[in-house]
Image (cartoon, rainbow, N blue to C red):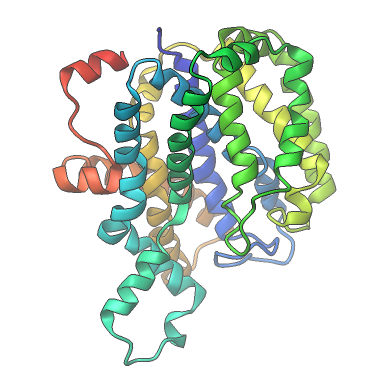
Length: 366
């Protein structure tokens, strides 16, 4: 089948959203733990957190579900799992010991935990703490690997594609009504303390991508009504930010509310529809970024903590300049790290999950 360029564009664009989000998150004044804290009690720039957080990871999992369906049309189950294991599980497990422990070191330092540890603690124990604290955004890779593994059972149950074909009949009212699934799934399978592991809503998004949004008919429907979805997303965005601003946007109170489900689903449909309608064509800059999108996603958090620690602890910069330097610098550093690590065979595999592809694999992807 012909590669759908716009899906690559959406995935890469969403990764760039994640980079921007994390910069603002690191300095948030909304009570969300894990960063330096705010520069003042009220920060109107934090509005970007309310704009992005509800929908961008749901969108990534939905795109991942679509991609999984397309991949399984070209690969055997064994080839699919082997490729997903290399790309997702290896960096988010073995990669922690090789590179991402550095991210954990900065996380522990920012939290002030090093000063609370006894001086006689063995170095190996401190290293293991860094490893466990270094997962960062790789929780996405861990969850996606589990979701991908579940497709082996799902494909056996639906081996004749009867359910898949049935899902392809979804029309506009049905597609919109999936907002109820978003709201319902947000209530279940949420891990305590480490709140990013929201298995309910993310697995629902993944399965919707696999069964429903991988159909050309559904994608064409979204493109047809993309302008309406975009208008609805803009209006709901303003309303959502006004309604929730000042409250913890990552709390259960917010994430499990029906308003969040409505806002995130409208945004997902708008991005999918607009992407199909206007961005299904190649672009040299995007072609470069598409091939490095996972690397940017995996590496940016470590780059961000290093750069922002340097600015906060060793420089006296205006607040606006900190944001500007952080966004531009993290993006550049992430690409630089990718270009360096991708040229070192062992690190390329353990940190990025990349192996040298055989010619037939390259041809199959194109």
